[in-house]
Amino acid sequence: MDDRATDAAARERAILRGLCNGTLAGAARSQAMQRLSAECFEDHFHREVLAALKEIPRSEPEILREHLPLRLLNRGFVDVELDDFFAPPGAGAEELARWIAELAARAAGRKTR
Image 1: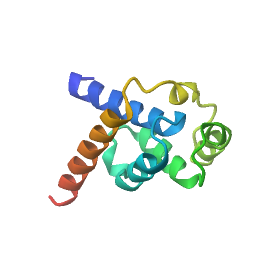
Image 2: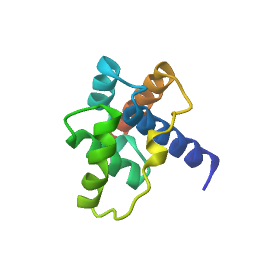
Image 3: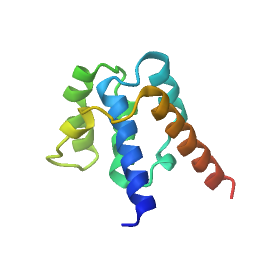
Image 4: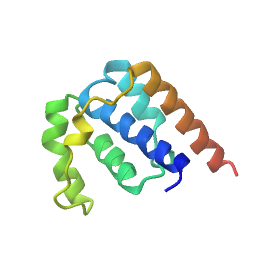
């Protein structure tokens, strides 16, 4: 895996952590969920986690921890370790929002080609 792919996967994982653990909360989380689409993520599993998160109508980490495994199981992911998604993201909400904007812009650019 090249450095760019490693960086992209790390940023994707950090964004998902922010969505799962409450770093991105309230309006910041709502905006992130609106901006992010499956096309934003390069990693297939990250795309599936995002889709599963979008299916869960609540955003509290306790609720997500309870419902996310079943949503992923329904998508064909058996016995997935999710603790990492509830760890601190390693970035603050502002940095995560910047990364989300970059991913969304890149995905939009791919759609127009």
